[in-house]
Length: 368
Image 1 (spheres, rainbow, N blue to C red):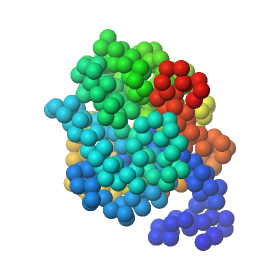
Image 2: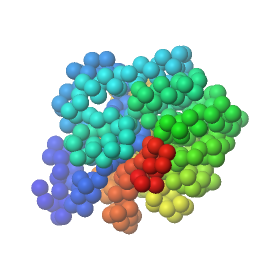
Image 3: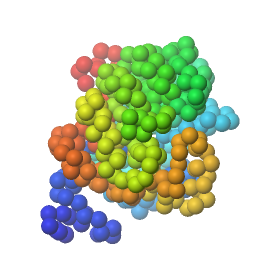
């Protein structure tokens, strides 16, 4: 349905998007490097425990989002983190195996290319904490199970410091060994929740690109330790790394009103600071966002978050709080004057390039 150069791509929603936006998303491998299938964890756990509960309608909603590859990592911090992480990754493997016509586990650079062509949705298996790496051999074991990304810390741990700890702990000697083993195997080092010192130390220790899968710019949200400093962003870029921008309200701006334009300001800041080649998407939300969740689930999530995150009455941002938000983001990037080539890089090309270098075996990175 054509409406003044805009198309109603999804009749049930009534949302309209420009032909340019639709074409860009249709031709791009869109990667959300912290994209949850849902933040409704009871529902997600029911899908994992009984994969048959995930229906064709559920898949259709995910596919209509425009996202090609999801990285649905969570972070376990309490209790037996090793066992919890093992159950999580085993559950994802079983879920993907039960829905192999719909999902593809992204293990390699070849899979990054195959997901779009095959019509399946890609799942990058990762963790938002590396406490399950009790020994260096554990890195090997979880790599063999399919884990390809690991955030070094959520809180302070044996590897280094978490962003919410005021002591600003650096990477430990053991942490440096973990980074070296991840580099050797081809597992991406993620520093999204790391302290400032651990972030910089990890970049220095890594021989491969380092990722910030989901964070924003502290220059635009002063005082937020969850956001990255300009120094860290420059150093991430110097490794060939990429930073995924989130749409979580308190990490976008500390004051109201908060709009999609504030999110776009973070894209602009990184682009001006280090170049568009180091920008990506790391929404840090589920398909429907936070605010539409059943209230008991939303309260449960908030109970697990640190007060320093500064959550307010709303968690989502209007315009980015629905399953088609990738289209709104793309329209915003067009509005800000980004070229088609740049938008294709932001939507997934940059993360695809960085992951290709990280996952390549020794001697293959240049060819990739």
